[in-house]
Image 1 (cartoon, rainbow over the protein chains, first blue to last red):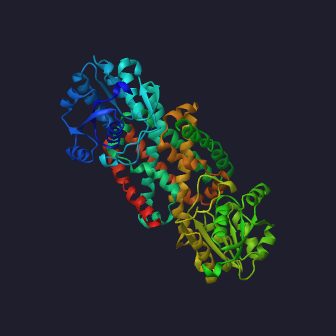
Image 2 (cartoon, helix red, strand yellow):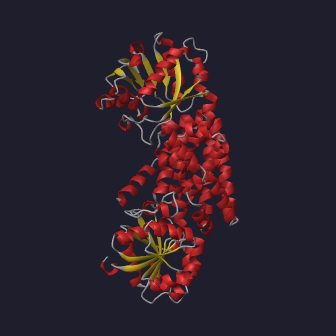
Image 3 (cartoon, rainbow over the protein chains, first blue to last red):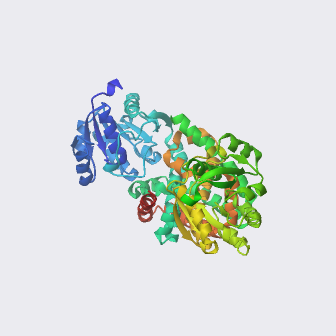
Length: 293
Length: 293
């Protein structure tokens, strides 16, 4: 952590991710100053008010003044902003993004002369809430950060990024950007679509919300929690990872159709066997909790 | 609560639901004695060991000795056991079931001469764990209990059942058994199937579990939590409510297919609009939490 102390950090995008990162880096002494940039002046004002950032600047000025620039914006805006940052970045500064898709962005900047100053990061952390008011110090603690295509980053860039992620108390792992996008389609993007469509199905059926209030238990709440997530963040993710997500959805639809056939055929034994198989997810989830603790 | 004090209660089925109910009724002074009955002697021994029940009896003896008989067994066993209980029940005693489907069971005992002694109850409470070791005092606190077809129960039966549910600190509501099964297919049964198939899809794709460990976040954990649930409990529920659940699954599959089409067509705006619509689930979930608190 030593070499990072007292850095000037520009955070571009002052929502849940950018705001929480800013709070943690400031509170933990990694950042001397946090410069905020956001497309919305309402978010900028609110971030200042909440003490998430020390000052607001234009992107161009923020790039000039900062040792580290963190992009925490929707993934369909990232490549353009990232290229702009790489065009202007100081030779010893570093830029990181926080997006949930990695392959398209890494491909877009592959040939940029300053590619080495960029570190592609996906922090597996979030809540169903969004905006500066959702930000909190602690969001990233004990969570996993995936660094992608680090072979294309300068080694001192990666070191500085890891230093920042270490301050956030994250466990780090490395992966190619293509492999990242494939696997994340299954273990994250699919969960979000499943939750959104489940919310949709129930809302369409239950015009009278009192039935939901009265009858829904904690099971319903936990399966549809992600349906509260931000459309502005997720629509671009699904679009950018469309091929992998489409394949994951195809597999999920096939499995739902097979389950429906078992129900239609009153095949209790088939259902029992399939659910018993799937119960091994308990071991996997216990593994997640163990390895992350 | 007064008239219930010091009752003898038979609990048939000593798993999560029956065990938790027994613990709460004993700790809160409603039950003088808890008599346990289970198809498995291992469960019976464990329930005694854990102090969940005071003694183990055969079903026939338990019926003779008890003021209230609670059936907390898989729904495909309930009608047969319930008919047996109604054949032998004392004139002033009451039998309740705790199953997640209600229409078939209510229909099966509709013409029984002692139908009035039966109260059909669905407590909307549970966890993904099962067996006597999963039982705990407090499972039912602040949760909803749905009483079905109470018009066919004697009024003193309903009063005694409500007295018991009040001791569990449950909020009570009434509903026809057919309407219950229809709505619960959407707000509970569908969530469970969605979770099971999501677990299945990810396990099929990710043969190497390390990808799951490293990449899955809390979103994945919450959407697949229910995939840990007991197949012995759920297969009979899906079979017994097959028509409603099949229709709910059909709607869910249709919505997933529509989402997949938007992804395949890179229709970011369509996805954004649909997710914005579905975000209103936040208001519904807040309502659930508010009305239950």
